[in-house]
Image 1 (spheres, one colour):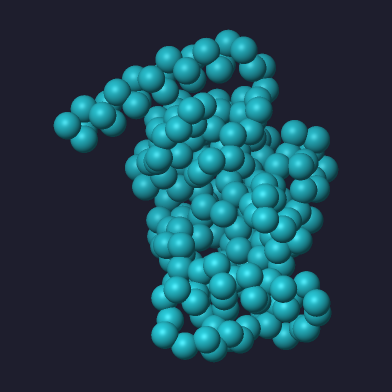
Image 2 (tube, helix red, strand yellow):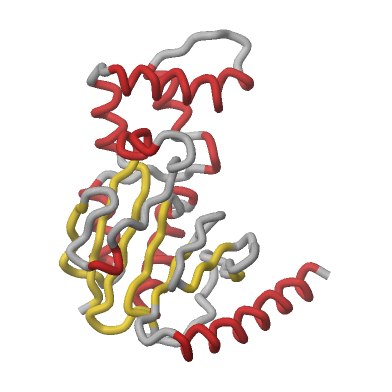
Length: 220
C-alpha cells in the first residue's frame, strides 16, 4: 500500500512538474520544503501537502539532468548524515543547469558558538524560548543555560550534522560546485534568491539570524 501511495505521489508530481515547466521559463526547485511554499518554485518534500510534491532526498532525484536554474534548501541538510548530505548535493549538481546556483540555509556551527560566547537581550530571550518550547517538557529539571541549548541543537528535530562554512564549502566542492560563498540571510546577488528564508518567521525572525548560515555555490 505504501509503495502504491508513493507511485501515486510520483505520478502526480510528474504531471505537475510538466505543467510547471510549461509555465516557468526560469526553473527553480525547493527541496525539503516543509510547509514553506514559495511562489514560482517547484516545492518538494518527503511529506506532501498542497502545492508540495513528493521527493525523497536519500534517493536519486526524479528529474532529468540540467533542468533547474536554481535550487533552494532551508533547514534541511542538517537532517542528513555527512554521506547522505554529499549524495543529495551531487543530485542537486546533476539536475542544475550549467551556471545554475544552489542556496542552502542551515544551522551554522559558528552561529551557535557566537550565541554561546556573547550575551545580549536577544540571546537571553532566545535561550528562554528554546528551553520552554523544546527542552523543558523532556527534562525533569529547570536548568536553562546556553550549554543546554547548544547540546539540544545537535540532538533535537532529527538533526544529524551541523556544518560550519569550511566544511560545507568542502562538501559542495567535493560534489562538483565552485564559487562557494557565504551570504547574509535574505540577501543574494541573484534577485531570484533574495528574501527566501522563512524559518521562525512566525515566531521571531531574529532567532533565525542567531541560528542560520546561508551558503551559495555554482555549477560550472
